[in-house]
Length: 343
Image (cartoon, rainbow, N blue to C red):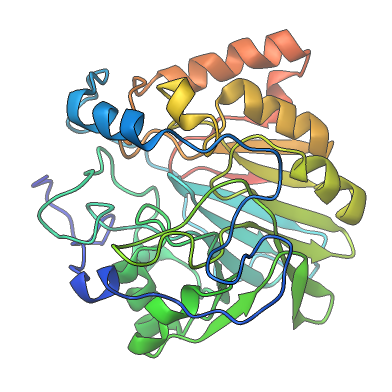
């Protein structure tokens, strides 16, 4: 990737071998924690580790392009509105979205790094730039961090945000151990806990069906989840990484229908190995229906080749799933990187 640029549409990956050896220490009682590790409380089938290892060694993935050029869109304003009823959401790429809710700016799982990896020289490499350069971001009031996998917790991007905006990170239990060493302010929450962010704005940390780990000692030692920005005018739900599970219905029951849901549609093949931790497009449409979301936005596709499906497969499969489930296409959007929509 030698595309000339004057702004940071992607940045070098920070080698974080020190994080590979860290292990969070948690002292709580919760129905999804066994005293050592977190787990998914729903009926589950643990992934066959032998089959997973065999897939890693013998995988035959569809070929992705080496590089894709993004279209150009207008840039976000510093502060969108004085009213919490005015929302604009921008798709930056992968699971990174900019939520402008009234006067507040939130980023989900910010990843501008060239690779999602603990190493600058190895690991999945992005095939397109972020839709918004770091320098073109408005002041970021908080990061909504779902979990600690490298395509979601990117140390280089969080350091940039800390240095330029002093942005706090709101995330699940245990994830602060990776970030506080850099001076980043971290607010850790358990599932169903909330943080009073500002008058009329609460951030809720919610369940997801997934797992966690950044190294050799910390598998499931930190919590994974979803988040929602709750206002008097509705809530914006960010699903993070997740398999399909009953938590979507429970979120609807507790918080009501999201005004907007950000739902993953990629990284789902081969299905027997991925279905426990990643939704496919049909699962995502079912989640949209379980949530009774007014609108949904697709994410977690089109940037990093993490699994076997082709780069175009998620968007095409989403069209088919929407038709099958009787959901209008305009209710579940596929946005281009850099595009912003009013909701």
